[in-house]
Amino acid sequence: MVDAVSFKGNKDGVVLLLDCTVEFEELCQIIVQKLWQSRSFLGEHTTLVVNSGEICLEDGQRLALKVLLQSLGHDVKYFIPERSSMEQQKEIGLPTTGYPSQTDEEVSQETRDISPIPDILADAEHYIAEDTLVVRKNVRSGQKIVYDGTLIILGDVNAGAELVASGHILVLGTLRGVAHAGCKGNKEAIVYATNLCSLQLRIADFIARAPDGENTQRHVPEIARIIDNYLVIEEI
Image (cartoon, rainbow, N blue to C red; front, side, top):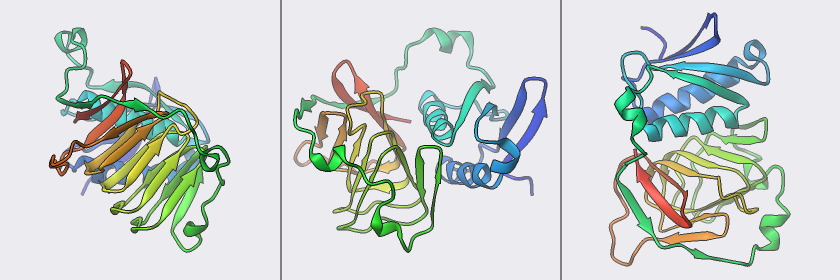
């Protein structure tokens, strides 16, 4: 069986070959594992060409992969296949669920003085690459992970759990707990989840709460980010 994620060299550098018949969540987890295993070969910073074969990745998937790779210290030079010229002319028109966002001027001292490695990870499988903490476990109710950088969870985040990061937050699983990305004021941060069921998301000082009575369990990968001073959730 051909590996779902592999590397190949060409005139433009290192190509990341993806088997996109694999579910996107599983593919992202394999990418993280492969990059970690290949860190001696790739070095600390490599520009990659991402080749998804015959499948053209959606805008949201490209954004999630770009953030994932950048979080692990690697840039994306370009994607193969490229989008068609017609697609390139279109603005991102993904289905959105936008909640008018309210700003919260107070940033707690807890998010200002972020601990480098949360104590609850003492018995968990985790590692740090660049300014990114990768956690290979489910985050249980009552647990809180606070990290100065990007936070990647390979597992589920249960209701009652909380994630706080000064960078991006990517959950390759179900996010039911509270997530606060860009907690030091970074409005470019995103929250990505394979299954986003959170009742409250925060990016920088913007807060989005699901309307009362709305079914937040949509079972599709989604990205939350700031667009025109609204915290917008886009389906992939």
